[in-house]
Length: 591
Image 1 (tube, rainbow, N blue to C red):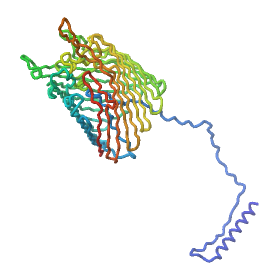
Image 2 (cartoon, one colour; image 1 turned 45 degrees about the vertical axis):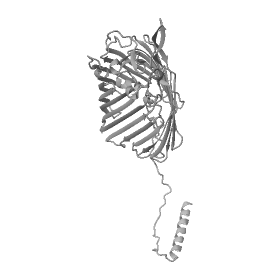
Image 3 (cartoon, helix red, strand yellow; image 1 turned 90 degrees about the vertical axis):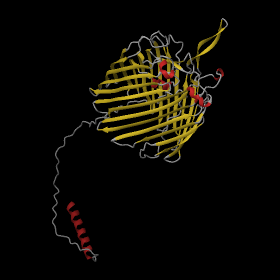
Image 4 (cartoon, rainbow, N blue to C red; image 1 turned 120 degrees about the vertical axis):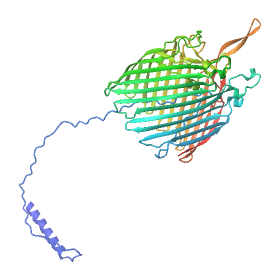
């Protein structure tokens, strides 16, 4: 049958070819069918070699498990003492599409109390060879809550930074300058014959800082390092000054994928000076000068096991040149504290749920460098420099434990409890000779300090960001009547909301528990008035701030912020009430 079908097919093809040949040509050459013989072999069998069957399933190596480190980048809530700085940090409104990074913007605003606010942020664009930036800030109020300009304040600063990249290394430097102006307005006008002249109660601070450093920017390098050298200078209106040469560094050497050696260290060499002939013009008055030296290092071995266990074994060794025994044995001054310190640096952690829940605990302790530069940022109403004894704090052996968790997408939680024995921990108490100024006072014995810290952060698709930070502190003072100037509880609730592509809203709520200062009470003894020193407690601080930023064009926007909207004239430090409702409005331009 197959030969007959093939012959029929060939016959049909020949007939079609003849018919096509008989048709008239249409511009193409006529085709011809050549004679050919076709051989059909029906008994041929195609054979293939036998294949080897593999019954084992193909095994694919699982993808490497990513290492997720939960980092907590919460704002630092150290607040200026003049009033709580509840201005919400400037956050850029998310652009509709990625744009060229310029890093430059200017902001200017005005408000009640004669307030002027300005900021310039000038930075380089993305560059693989270098980066630089200049940040200028100013905020000042011509009037305050007490007697107008007698409680005026102003803060101005400039910061210049830069880095140069050479392969895996980065060389950088920074320059900082700041000038601040305050007034000692914590007086009781009803007890004064006349209102003080603002020039006689003015205090100014000048600050300067410079630092150079080198660091490794290759995260996979076996050796990680950052070494810095710098200088800070501080001066006030009483001719007091402080010069501080300092060094700091971090070094890490990877022994394997799971272990490394680390070394952290810092050193500081301070010289304090004051021209007493100006502030205390008395016969025989000489200049005040004192040197303060500080060195501290922490070598450690760190191990990160594959079973979820992490371990740190090390020690902290420190030296502070002061204080020895203070002549006279003043119970409010540092006394009889060792100049050297050796504390453990032990920590063990365990991931109960990988990437979700880790618990940890350990033993620690360290010296805390204390400088006039930092103290006057916390409390600008300190009495003149020579009358204050500044000493480094000794946080003795401390026990701590806590956890970090990421229980849900966008949610991060952390908590930590610490108990330590401290020496030379400073407190702010109103001066017994002038209650508008504050003295640094110390408890002569080792005191127990308990701190419970908690943080919660929630972020949702770059639309909503809400955070909570809270600290509970207990100071077991023995010789002092109260833990002067240190509140037992500090809480901050903050959040931002991108309402639209053009509108950003934000809010901050601060709560400080009341703290203690001292005042006077006059009693009669045998018919004569006698002043008695008494402790006084301030009311709790409740400060609510709201902010709105609206982008009119891609480069131009306007903003408005209201501070202390509860209108509470609270006192962060005794006798110094804050401004009431403070509203600032302005515009910003980015380029």
